Image 1 (cartoon, one colour):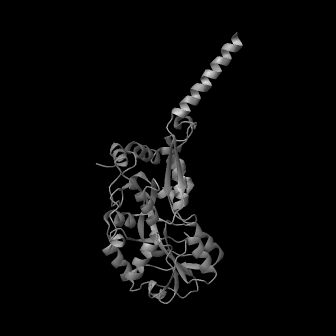
Image 2 (image 1 turned 30 degrees about the vertical axis):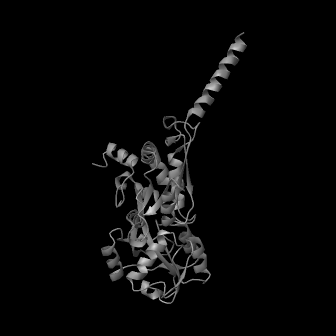
Length: 333
């Protein structure tokens, strides 16, 4: 009799646990990032891991995930900022990373997005980290300024990327255009290979340092970063508030000295169509103390992702769920 009672109790407990698992709502949430050799993709992976808490996971208080219960987030490789904005607007992705300039232009239908319908449903979750414009050449190239790119083979990254947008602005600021260079459309890893093999003379990349493709390139051949400074840079920062003068420090890449350039901000954006409660919980998970540990060890840029700077440079509205969290946390008055 005892055996049958025990078996019945075990069966009941098993069914109860299974029922609880089924009852827990399962949500899938995508984060559009960038190329796998750039900065967005690995950072997206760290954040996706931090906010996920699949059914059956140990609770935060039990040493398990401190993510959103029932949420499975995934970092999706993409063509970059513009691609992510378009995918969010069309409902193809739940969220994504975008440069501050690209997000603002898309939301307002201005700048490089002039003539397109404003992406009025774009909303911000958080500002993440500064992204520096890298202009990479071989150390013995003789290219020492943006003006020296005249007549050269230059990769601007793919159309649809934030790098492409900013590369065009930088060329214009120094009196150049795609008519005065031979423009290529390569992602950072392919551009690094092409530079090393002599197929191009220079390439642009916008992202947090150090980025994997340039780290690998600098470890195998002698490269340098071309300064983006002087009157051209001053004109950029004066005309566009989302650009700021900033340095890539000595040692960010092997044997590459500190270089003055300009930077924009990387932001995590979503759509106003996403659930207020879900985005609230995602934002809360992002800034959980245990997530801090994951950010600090997950990527070199992770230490720059802080709650104290989460609202810096955001030029589009916050998502209502994120706004609720920041108000509760005392970060937004």
